[in-house]
Figure 1 (tube, rainbow, N blue to C red):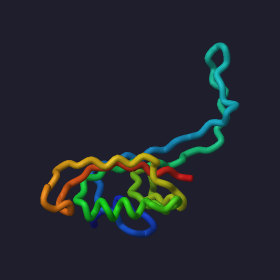
Figure 2 (cartoon, rainbow, N blue to C red):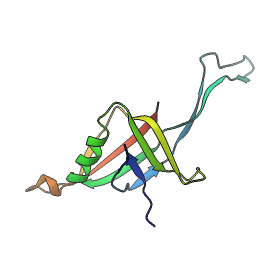
Figure 3 (cartoon, rainbow, N blue to C red):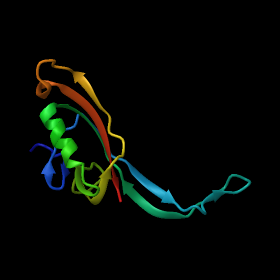
Length: 125
């Protein structure tokens, strides 16, 4: 069975060329180091998901992906090697603010045949 690497709002996205799951803990502003360098840490949230995906896509698939990330809040389901089910769903996420699309193989007579690279990170609310 083929892996579904990424779904946005329940819609399967094109297969990425690379994927990095990221999990972060967030400290409060009162977390500090003492004069002797000992950390006094107050964790306010653990295991916040922010998976990153790299894609190399032709124009139609690029448009599908970029259209899917337009809403301010999206649901993101992705293959997660640390999950017992192999899948994690972030019910409310957003795509990183900066989205750079770079041409990989320009096809000068028809933009729909061009290949593009884009990297996206989805951040859990």
